[in-house]
Image (cartoon, rainbow, N blue to C red; front, side, top):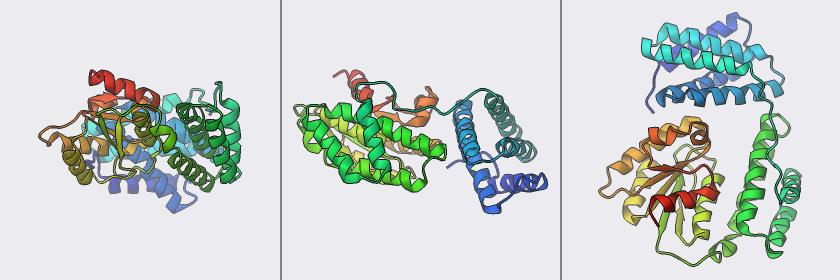
Length: 334
């Protein structure tokens, strides 16, 4: 990935500054947090997107508060990073970094409580029960709940949109607020992925086949795959042949299979902001193809900055799985 600063020099300067202020309790964790802050700041600068950094800072503030850390840990780190970059980076980068950090610090002063994701919809009770089961490590019961719901007439699309999607978001929020562990989060995600893999008979029977082909994947370094997998499945429900390549797809391999398969559409996903540059890189590789198909991108950072999809060179953007097929077919004039 392109860099906008001498990372090692900045990290060293920030660490020494925080240590002098008495804000270092664990060297390894401190260095990890500094690098994490810089990952997001650097990606925001590369994409001229202060929104990406401010959104991350708000998320980090909720996380750190729920871990019991004082407010000054995050605020002190950001101010120290600003000072280090102003000292060590070129003027253009320093000015942008200062602008983005100052903006994020101002937004930190606003109220930003963590609210639940289960919402008010017809399947809320089903979503609540599914969440309870996966958090209690009752995978068999969770599977039976979903299968019995489908057999009772609930559409697979509604299971995806009103159960799986909000539950996954809620699990992430529970981890962020220190109510569940990483192990709980990983377990719950693996249960949902396992159940989704059993639903293809319902997906394939949802509509007649059409002569349309999608190739979809998460970019390299991206492991959050449920969202793009849902997108892929929604295309299948609408009659497309959907070729889903999974998480952490190597760029050159992805370009090669697109060249071989010649799909009508490519879908790329990045959930973590620091993977946005990988989206851009893959699109640049696809641009070298003789007959490049349109590229649709999605994932959390593209919803935070609604212009980000254009900045990475994509042709279209879908905010969620339910709208992806409509957006694509309108773009392709189908």
